[in-house]
Image (cartoon, rainbow, N blue to C red; front, side, top):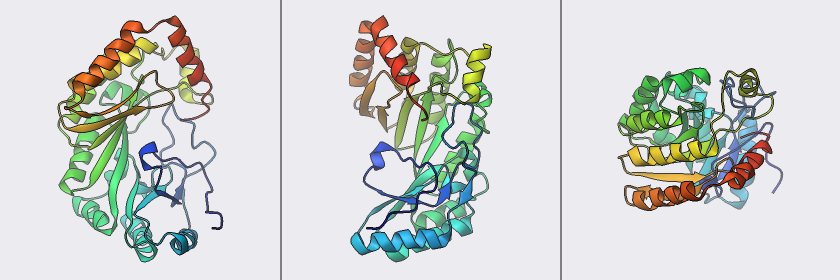
Length: 297
């Protein structure tokens, strides 16, 4: 197979590792989150339809039965309904059995009606991964996410009304030292009103060349310690009441676990309690050192 077209940084969740990574956009349409440097130097743009078709033709020669496509880019769902329709129809033409998953910002849903969302689902966009990060308005505002918790609730309710499957990302630590537990409680309260089928639990790293790094240096943001970060995730799991799959395997985190709530809640909480009870200074240093080595997330 010839090389696929990848013109910018691309990433997908580990749970989608066996899907086709098809570049449909480059960069992030927002690109203003204080903690992120992943798309620096890559202005948001659409991949040409001719490029997308070339990649699909190449893949279809080898795997015409492919069932999972990851529409790659920072947040391809920012595209207009008509553009997403064209992409979906190309995928259907060459990979008729494929289900499409992709990243979406909360703001990407604001200019799409429930009917739009349902139509895109019928075309193949059946699964969205939404980086809500937190349900804490103070944290969302400071990190310049571009939306508040009320927007998360309103827009994800639209997905549910349109019968679109979706997952969410929670980014621990962004509330800052001493505020992480409050962020977890507020997020659980928000998510208990919704029905994502999965939540990815990660924790923020202070990366070079980010506004957040400058905030830390200026004393405008105080990074929480590892125990507070672990307690934050424990608090979130404790307060979640809905049925949801929890995936907490992140290179930036001190913990590693997965499980279904409520079935595995007790097991997960016991694991986290054990980590907290036995966590020491050496463990903290190891995690901090590993996180410092990250160039992007």
